[in-house]
Length: 192
Image (cartoon, rainbow, N blue to C red):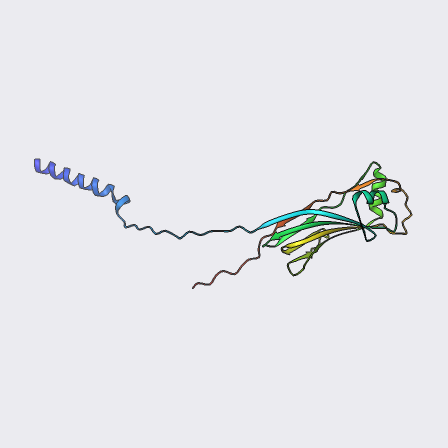
């Protein structure tokens, strides 16, 4: 009986030793390191750096523009200078202009009378282009360079509504927003 007990204990010990280790030590393993990869994020910079004002083609300061007065037949251009540095497609959105005055009726009358255009312009289309979209205040931007956003206000000379006369009317500020767009789908690399 001693032999039977010893044999049973030996079999049980063998099952415990080998059976318990089947899931953890019963395979070969090797580890290899994947080389280091550095990922650079796409540059994205947008700076508004000054502006100029013109009335009927003559450059003026804000004070001179206010003193001179704006009347039917005049054209005012405000040029906001911008620097863009993007390597992916982007979208420039120009917020609608808001007119304010102590006399809301005067602000509304002036806004209604004016022909207003807003247009971004590149200083060199070799490096940066603005492409209009269906929305007149949204442009697709390709490339990086300096440019400006021109806001042109034309008060038609045949305007007879005097509600806006002898008023100080503020328009703006207007926000310019640059948004990165996703790149178009690139073809899958070929196996090689």
